[in-house]
Image 1 (cartoon, helix red, strand yellow):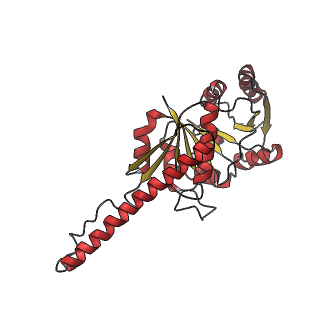
Image 2: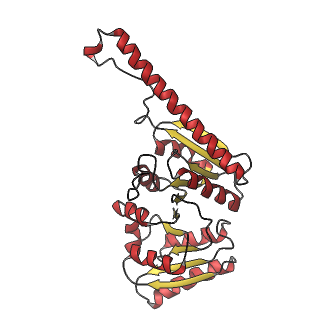
Image 3: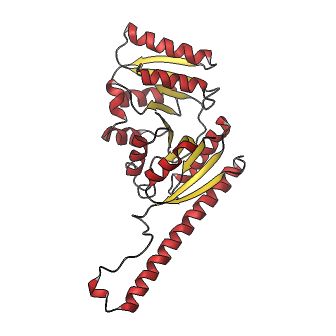
Length: 283
């Protein structure tokens, strides 16, 4: 059965990612698992010093260097196990029963793809270990994950706040209409008010698209608010979010018109960089 999976790396964003994953697991009534990936570019799995011609006459030094690399890799593995252990304890303290932990080695995106059939919702921090101290940076790994994974992805900020309202950036596309159907059938946001917001002109066509989406969510039991705002998508969404005190943003990974530009290419980094609340990316 697909479950809620949180990728954790020990950065400052890891505690909040754990908490949002536990929150989602409870709301969806799905098992929770944590995964930590040991990436070879950061922690080489083995030392290959054969190309160092100038060291070949120093066998003892070569052996010492190889031993250092081995210890470094072993320490990285132990660090990953500790990160997973602490995450598991944190989730259990939040009420999760027996969360699973997994440790993998290799490329992050490749390892997540191997697990994709087991994932319903992937939770990941907005910035990773190498970017945690740079509040204006977005982890390059996160961009790769968002572009390549075909699952719901919840990108989390540094602090956890249980969501009490949702802003759904709706553009009227077929993809977003399907996303409305997905959300209507999901328990993730049950009981939370949803704001359907379209950025553009207040035409009859746009209102009709919003009304149809609103009706579908209302039939599923949601309290729904609709709005059309003018301006640049990113600024207009953040402005509406601040006005209404909304603490979770939902967007499609791909849509049409200006929405499509938000989560493709460099605009992905811009949107993820400026949000201070969790962002659920729909595929």
